[in-house]
Amino acid sequence: MNLKEYIRSIPDYPKKGILFRDITTLIKNEKAFKETIDQIIENSKNLNFNKIAAIESRGFVFASAVSYLMNKPFILLRKKNKLPSKVHSVDFELEYGKATIEVHKDSIEKNDNVLIIDDLIATGGTAKAAAKLIEISGGNVSGFIFVINLFDLKGSDQLIQKGYKVKNLIDFPGH
Image (tube, rainbow, N blue to C red; front, top):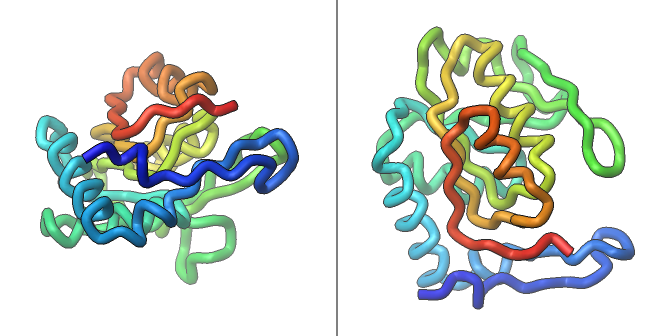
């Protein structure tokens, strides 16, 4: 199955000049969604991990299904002030401003090996912040799996240069 056929491209969203890659057309198709989850699981087989983390919010869609099927704990990496207990926080730069992501301090134990799943990687800012959150929590990043890689924005390349294992299911240009 060619998953690329299930991604809708929307020009000038959320702002002019952006070509948005929409996963809702993939997840509303039960066969394409199942194939996506199966491919994520297959791509994770050579990674050593005992927990799965996902970046808010679309990463939750994929990681929760993978977590359930693999019987692994699921860790939420959320936007600032969305978690009710004590958190670790990481501030980072986006193409259009600054942001913060957080994780509960009790979600990751020392030496946990964590697989990070997200729907898309572009410039890599959010993914690098996610890795930093795992590491300041005492865990190790086992790798990243993205459904979509916007290859010309070089986010995956930056993660690989930092020594992380990175896999993706679909490549698109970012522009």
